[in-house]
Amino acid sequence: MKSWYEIKAKQDSADIYIYDELGLFGVAVSQLVSEIAALKGKALNVYINSPGGPVFDGIAVFNALSRHEGGVNVIVDGLAASVASVIAQAGTSRTMGKASALMVHDAWGVAIGDAGVMEKARDQFEAASNQVSEIYAAKAGGTPEEWRQKMMDETWYRGQEAVDAGLADVAIGAIQNAYAGRVFNLSKFNKVPEWVNQDPIDPAKPGDEPEIKEDDVDEKAIRQALGLDDEGDILAAVTGLHTEIATLKASLKDQDPPGKDENRTLRRELADAEKKYIQLETEKDRKVVELQSELRVAQAEHRVDAAIQAGRVAPAQRAMVLNIALRESEDDFNTFIKGLPSVDFTEHGGAGGGDFADYEPTPQEIAIAKQMGSWDEAKPAESRLALMRAKAAAKGVTIPASKEA
Image 1 (spheres, rainbow, N blue to C red):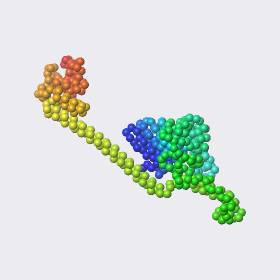
Image 2: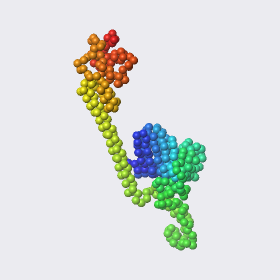
Image 3: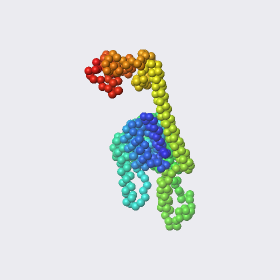
Image 4: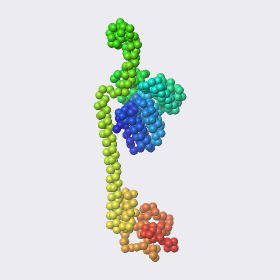
C-alpha cells in the first residue's frame, strides 16, 4: 500500500512521485528503497512535492537513487523542503518546475530525557546536518561549512535561485508568486517566505501572539486565570505558558487537519484500485502477445502443410520450410513455393550413385537451402556435399571422405 509515494513502471523507465511527507500512513521508507532497487536498469523520473520528513529516511532515499543504474531525472514539481531537497540532489539531472520552491535547513527534532539524552540527541542532529551539508557541497559546489551556514539560516530558493545556487540544473517556466501543487502546513519552519503558499490551518508560529497592554486587561483576572496569588510573577507565568503552547504546537505539527482520515482512506482505496488496474492491463497485454504468437505459428504451419499436400514440399522437409514460413511474409512464401518443382516421393536422387544415393539433395532441398542462405552458388559441389552429409548425419550415417565426391 503506497500513500506518500507512487511508482508507475513502464517498459524502459519508471515514474516515482514523492508527493507528501516521507513515511506517512505507516508506509516505511525502506519499502520505497526496496522498490527502487527492483527497477535496476530503468531510467527513473522522480517528481517531488514534499515538505521533507525524518532526515535519515531522506538520506536513505538519496543513497538508493544515487546508486541506481539507469539514470535518475529529478523534477521538483512544487516543494522540495528540508530533507526532500537532499533527495532532489540524487538526480543526474535536476529540474525546478514552474514556480517551484526548495529549502535547506539544519536537522532538528524533539528529544525527551535528562542531560545525557539531550547531549546524545545534539550529537546526532549535528552529525546529520554535517552529512547533509557534504551532500549539498558535492552536488552544488562550495564547502560544507558554507552550506551549514545556509542550513542554519533556513534558506529558501525559488526555481531560478536554486539553479543559481547549484542545487538544480535548470528551471522550467516563468517564476510566479508561489509554487504549484499541493499546499502543506509549514508552521514548523521558522522563515517561510510570503511567496510560499501554506495550509491555512493553524499557520501561526510561536511569537506571533499579539502584545498585551496593561490598560487593556484586568490584572486580577489575569492572575486568577494563571492561578497566581498577589505575589506571583505574571511575566514568568506568561512566558511559561508560551513555552507550553510552542511545545504543544511542535508535537501537533504533523497531525492531519480535520477530515483527513476520510481522505486518507479514499487515497488508499484509489492506490489499490490503480495497482489492480495496472496488473490487469499488463496481464491482458501479455495474453494478447501470446495469442498473436500462437496464431502466427498456426498460420505458418497451415501454409507449409498445404504446400506438402500440393506436392511442392516433401514431408521430411517440413521443419526447414516452416522456418521459412515464419520468417517470410505470406506473399513471399507463396511465391517461393510456386517456384519449387513438384516432388517425386518415389525418387531417391542419384547423381552421386552408390550406397549414399539416398542422401543426394533433391531440387526442392537445394531451393530451400538457397532460401535459407546455406547454399553457395560459387561452390555448388561443396554445398551439395554439405547437404548430403547433413541428411546422412540426421539418420546416424557418416559419409566417408572417399565417398563424398
